[in-house]
Amino acid sequence: MKYSHPQKFDPKKLHSLNINVQAISLIPPKSKILEIGCADGFIGEYLINEKECEVVGVEKDPEAAKKAEKRGLKMIKGDIEEKSTFEKLLKFGKFEVILATSVIEHLKDPGKVLRELKDFLKKDGFLVVSTSNIVHWSARIKILMGKFEYEDYGLFDNTHLRFFTPKTFKKLIEDSGYKVDYFSFDSVGGGYPKISRFFSLFFPNLFGYQMLIKGVKNA
Image 1: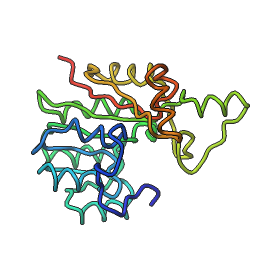
Image 2: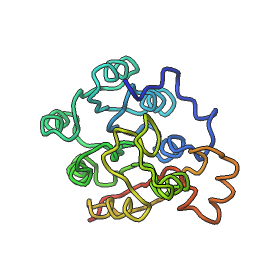
Image 3: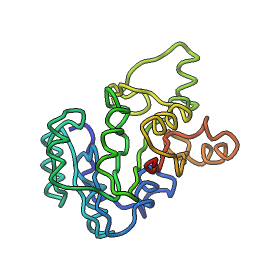
Image 4: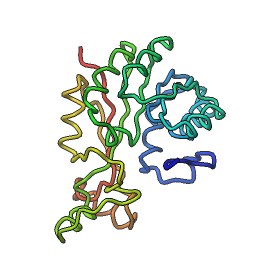
């Protein structure tokens, strides 16, 4: 299981610009949430216990799904890009929030998934989605030096199938039938948090390590 968080998720121990802290700050208490790629359920557990939310998780890693279930999530074990997973989702009805943090870069066709997920949002529901920023300064330096080598984690994670800039990330959301209601960066990830935070005030595209969008359904 590559993505796990064995300890309880505690946003108080993290910087306010941390991408997951930003994501949960957008979620109203007592919401009904669909979390795509919930891993071992560390975010869902927090939302259940601290915000009294109902969380349905989708996770294709069997070991991670089992741990998420123990943490209180209602689980669908499957790949969100498979039709059978969407069929299993039908019994849960519609959601106030669809949460997909650090997921779309792992999908073969994220636009198709986002379009299909629209049907599971309530009229006033919204999407919260995050992804990494491939034009972060650290990636630019590597490419400038002629390197594009996959790694176990990070911007060049060896399970990433897609790469996004701020412009293409926004375009993906808009082309999938959503309006970008909110956009922000995590400028404390990727190393040198104090320096990156300062320079992000002037060059956000260059020093934003990850990106977050709240998308609302177009009429």
